[in-house]
Image 1 (cartoon, helix red, strand yellow):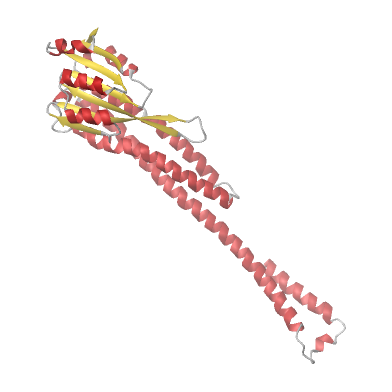
Image 2: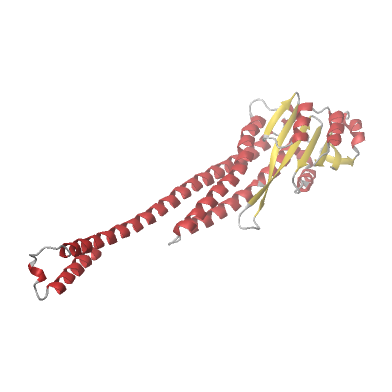
Length: 322
């Protein structure tokens, strides 16, 4: 579905145009076209491919979707894949909706194709139009603005994961956790680790790819905007570090949880062993006096019965208090 198709000239909005008139403006100096689509149909992508000369492999990736985050060069154009993440904290645990943004960038055009996401980029277009001096850099600056917006949406996801991890850790260290609660905590930690991995798969490949935009050899379409991509790389580095910290903390929490369960099991085993020792003494003494020997002087003693019970009780008490 086409959202908008806008021509910009010297950093300012020139006009909204139909896709059929794109070719009229591409040949004019100082102008570029920004097209935005959501859940694009194959015929829409085919029409834009003809209008801008998009590389067929990039178009195929956009049609198929579910691509790994990446930045690929096709001649003097770029094809960028970003994962769109939206955190839903309304339930018992944070769920993450994963969408995709495919961006085609050329010398005088930018095409953004959003898939499986309801959160658009109206604020990005408004931001760019408020800064005509920066928008004069052309599609390269628009690419930066889109990447910056996508990466900034990762921070609430990180915050939600950290809050959920704090709650699980607090439950782990609650006294009297018990086996069933310990099992639930481990299950929750593994589930959280899987959801954090979704964020890891969105950030790590993009961090590696984004470094291409500020190296010694910068793609031509990003010339003049490479300093801004350094900010994106900085944010990605911070997020990647936070993801690694969360994953390490989850691993530590699982280990601590298992250790606490082992300690509780050890305490139970010690108590059972102590009671077994007490009953062993009682059984041994009772067994001695249960033997059928004829010569057992204490059996003829008036206080033998009381003395035997007293000896059993005394030794049992000594073992118990030790």
